[in-house]
Every structure is written in structure tokens, then in C-alpha cells.
Image (cartoon, rainbow, N blue to C red):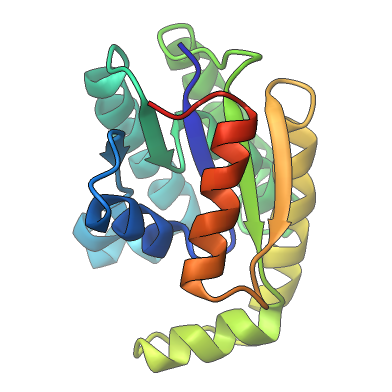
Length: 194
């Protein structure tokens, strides 16, 4: 059965939408991405180590939930492919490190393949809004992150566009309720409502 996968920018409404689904008692198996809350700070500082850590985190999380019906998840294992490519293209990891990450992803991805009927919703907001929202959460991201975010958007679309049912949504002007209604209508249209 097809999964629904939310990917995209930090602060673009992914968690807010999943919380909304919980609040209306939607009959989805909702899987949040909580890895960033448990990653040791010393690992987070090194992009290669952080991506390696996330590969294992998502593999364990997604493998444990793979058989669930009506699955909607915040990011997923295969999202680490565009993350690895972006990290290389923006100079955060070396070619050798990228090759190592891709090798590990290829080894594990056999257990967690994407299905062409999986719905991937790529949530986007402008960089300035990301920075403002992160600031209100007490998280400061420097201006040089703009290039990383821009490249990640391109690599994410490039990765998912031909492998899944891919939809891109700019969430900047949508209230949480409007975003929730828009996605629920999309799920109905795609016949993915439980």
C-alpha cells in the first residue's frame, strides 16, 4: 500500500500537519521525525557523521513501521540520498564520504524501496521565513545555509520526481488549517484517505 511522505524545508509545516492529523483523530499511522532531538551534539557538528547517523536512524524507524497500513511519515530513509548529494555539492563532505554514504544507503535501501504509488509531498518556504521561524524556536541558522537549502530543494525534487507520485507545495502563505485542508483534499483526490 502507498505511503504518504512529507519532505522539505525546516519549518515548512510538516510536524504541524501531523499534529493536526492527530488532533482530528485521523485514521493514519503517523510517524514523526524525531531524530534531530536525540542526535548527540558532537555528531551533529560533522555533516558526514550526522548523515551516517540519520541513515541508521531512518532505517531502524522505517523498517519497524514498514508493514503498517495508512502510513504517513515525516521524511523517510531515502531522503538521505538528496541530503548526501547536497552535502557534497555544497562542500560539507568529500567525494569519498559521499560515496561511503551512498554505498550504505544502497545496501539498506533494498529493505525499504520506494513505491511509484507513494505520495511524496515536498513542502517549501522561502529561506528568510525558515530563518525567522527557527529564530522564534531559539535555533539560529547563519545566512550561508541559504545555498545548502536551495541545493537541497533541487536535489530532493530531482530524487523523488520520477520515483514517486511527487507534489510540491509552497506552504509560506498557508495557515496551519489551510495547509491541513489542502493536504486532506489531496489525499481524498489520490484515494489515500483511510
